[in-house]
Image 1 (cartoon, helix red, strand yellow):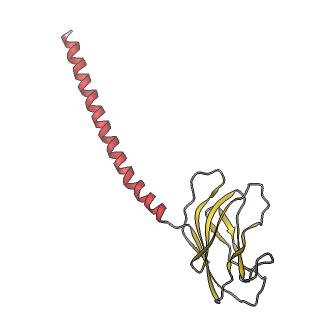
Image 2 (image 1 turned 45 degrees about the vertical axis):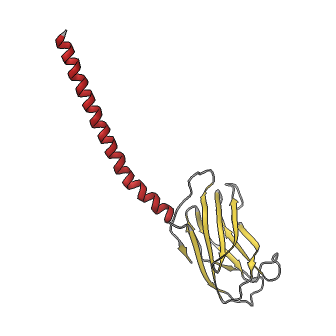
Image 3 (image 1 turned 90 degrees about the vertical axis):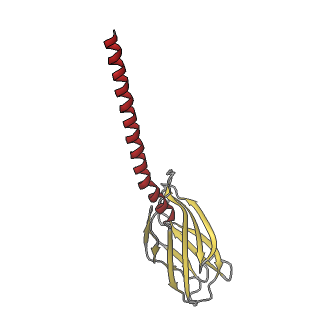
Amino acid sequence: MQHQRRTIALLERKLKQQAADSKTQLEEFVEKALTIICPLQEVQQAMPRSVIWNLQVNHSQRKQGIGSPYFTLGPLVDSYLMFYPSGDEDADKGQCSLYLSINRGVEVKVDLCIDGVKAATLEHKVGKRAKTGCLWGFSNFGCAPTFTFVVISLSFHVLRNNGSECPFDFHDVYL
């Protein structure tokens, strides 16, 4: 009987030691994981999701659009901007127009700026069965530019596939 008690006590000590060792190993693993995850989250948060387009405008092109080069940013594949410096056919006099091509099945919330000034925010979900080639934006985007060189910038708050809870983070695109 006394031998069994000693054996049980010995096994209890070994189990406690193994549990303590396992806890220490788990704590070390979590600490190492956090040293990797935390910097990645900081980089992800600091990484802008934007498109910047520098273009030269010919003001004699009334109602004529200027298309940006194609770009890919996350789920926006072969996307482009269409800018009407003097407005499109639906714009009020003195207004410019800006549109963005958005792929099917993509959700965006994006601030649209001209020469560093936020002119509008576009929030849109394009269904997976939507017609391709559609442009989304504003006929009355802002005051028509008076300068020859214009900077159009898009800063995405949300850029993801429909149904996803996680926004996509990618490097800036300069056109």
